[in-house]
Every structure is written in C-alpha cells, then in structure tokens.
Image (cartoon, rainbow, N blue to C red; front, top):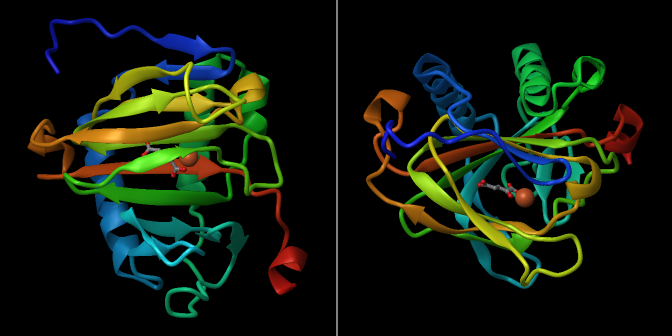
Length: 224
Ligand SMILES: O=C(O)CCC(=O)C(=O)O
Ligand SMILES: [Fe+2]
C-alpha cells in the first residue's frame, strides 16, 4: 500500500469504524511475537473443525476463552484438552485504546474489558466466509487488528450474508471495530493479497488477525 495514498478513518456503517495504520511497526512485531508463543501452546494453533466435518482454511488459536463452533469454553476439548492461555492485562489495555481510537468515547473505552481473543492466521489460500460473531453473550464491540499481508475484508449488513456489502482493504497495522448497530454485521475475508506485507511487521508471509471480544461468560459458565 503506497504511503502516498492517504487512508482516512472511515465509518462504514454506524459503529463500524476502520482506523488505518493504527499499530506502529514495533507494536505489530510485539503482537506477532505474542501470537507465535500462543500458537505453540498450551493449546496449539489448528484448523478449526466444523460440525459438518469440514475444517476452516484459517488456522486459529484462542486466548482467554477457547472458541469452537459455536461456543466458548476454558478448555480446548476439540484440540488437546488443555486450558487456553490467560487473557493478558496488556491486551485489555490495548483493546481500550483501540475502542477510544475508533469511537472517541473515553467512558466506553474505560469500561471495555475484552476477555477473549481469536488469533487467525491466513496463508495465501485461506479465506473466511461471511458470518456474524454471535457466540458471545455480550454485545460489546469486537476489536480487530490486522498484521502482515493485506486482505480484502467484506463488510456486510446485519440481515443477510449477501449484498449489500462493501469491500475494503485491511493493511498491516489497521484497526477495525464493529459494535453498536453494527455489532452483528456479516463479515468475511474473501482474499488475502500475498506478498504485500512489509517484513518489518514481524511476519514474512501470510496474514494475522486478532479479534478481541467480550464473551459475557463467567467462571460459573466455565464449570457447566
Ligand atoms: O480476519 C479477519 O479480519 C476477520 C476475522 C473474523 O471475522 C473472526 O475471527 O470472526
Ligand atoms: Fe468474525
């Protein structure tokens, strides 16, 4: 992405805000290092199995709570039975700063307390079909951070997985937040543009996406 083409902050729909170039290269490298560590364990990164028998092309590792279609647990019963890594305090602070950058609402940002992150890794072939993030019991915003290769991110509507939608590019360092009236928009990643990453981001190939969410679940739920 040419640095000469300005990419302003853009609200695609009420509550769906794209903040280009939000993470510095240093922050991107630190996040890549954290994700590399999570990818090795306690629950290794994997292609998530779908109930129909297929597997997702994206590889995912979870922090805080483990997601499998279509619920959250503390323990990764579909991988190795281990409890997922703790959601770190620094990531809560990062999530709050992200919310502030997207919405400019200091009170909402201070209250935002994400407790899970899905770390998705896309190689050149991986895609993510149109879906809603709706396995959380809380309707708090989702904070999405992108690192590595640029992707086409499809921002749809809350009613159907088809048109109308808008395709935007998420470049390394970009922030995207969807909350409020856009919390349940359909969205997906139809394409990753291989070879577009600046290696200084810490990733030489592929794309990393981190979505922070509020599950709304408690330790009581985890025991069920
Ligand atoms: O990779 C992305 O940008 C989106 C990821 C996503 O929608 C998800 O993990 O639910
Ligand atoms: Fe999603």
